[in-house]
View 1 (cartoon, each protein chain N blue to C red):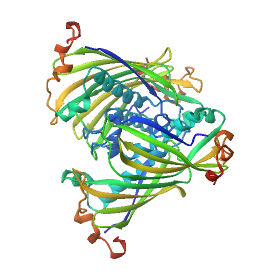
View 2 (tube, each protein chain N blue to C red):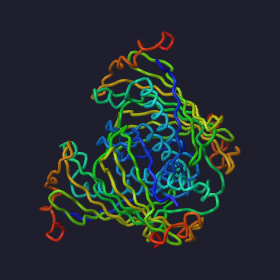
View 3 (cartoon, each protein chain N blue to C red):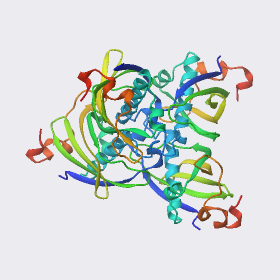
View 4 (cartoon, rainbow over the protein chains, first blue to last red):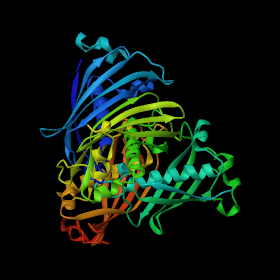
Length: 136
Length: 136
Length: 136
Length: 136
């Protein structure tokens, strides 16, 4: 099971703010893209998970901002799985421009159904898909 | 039937861009708020329309930008109904800061069901709710 | 010195996502509004701080999501100052719909100049404006 | 001089709304990306234009929406130069998913300096860079 994945993303003008930098809330949209693409690289597809009636909802986010990004910067985002329980996944993120670390972050997602009731993660991304040390 | 309504909206930092201005795409979010609040002032509620399975989807937008807006500016948005047919509504918008016209715009929305099939507008906002000269 | 402030904010359609909820990244835009309005209630103005060449940049964010918000919900956001040092401010946030706590969060902002060099906070919001127990 | 360029863009979760579709305001962010990349394909760079003190501001937008886009859809955006005068550029846009036209749009941008005064377009994208029939 692939546990880490890297994507490239270019900062859009619409994502900047009056300081001239990538607005701090938009980092979380990049992290969401990182999760989507890590899942795809693992052979899964988040859209199909939703079509089967399961949703991965964010229950916790944390981000440390080290250095700003500007319009047109090409950034590298490394997303990795940190821990998986029966119903939750934790990811960690590191966002770089070249070798400069711009932000480091983590998130916890819970699996729920359309009514918001907690559900087991789909088997393909659940704890049995991972080495023991990642199960939590 | 009320045909025009005004709201106030303050420009958020997250809505600005690296030029230091309200980003041009965000004007359309304000116009959407203008429609929501005009409908509420008319005694309707867009959320309830959706709960009954009808959606007002944007089929056409047009905006002329005359002058920029900045973070923390308080803007006034005038939204008015221009024309209503059995299945479509046209609105016009004028966005001001004090007496300065910042943008003028128009939109056409169509009424559809969950599958995207065109539907008659709800009676409360349909053509029979309006004077003859607004029916189109 | 006022240390806590409450604002009301209505969820916009453009802030929702395909789950039908306020998208998790948009909570941070509300928190930013909470800071702007707390500062205004204290007699300050963030726009004027920037016009004098100082910027309050986010260096750390953390949010726990307890319950989702929907389009058109009216939310109450309580923003309070938790700790202030010579160059940093910490805030805490609690977002409610009626009596339901939707999210609790915290942030740390640092004061920098246009070149990103750390600066003392403006006197009006710096540590000397606060009781001793808030200085950190 | 290259007059048309195509980019691919995948719809992000954060760009959808409660209808389950790409929100109508976000199309304009894609069109902005199309302009950025057309300019880059022409050998220019919008970031450098701004660094020299010139800004291309949107003065007019128009969009017709034909069919919705969903999360994770891969879209193709064709951006082309339609007309260029001494101080303005007009672009046209066509957004597709496979062979389905989702939206067709046009924009007019004006060249201004930091104070908002109209300026001549940089020579590399000005009217002399184009065949006579595009000058307007």
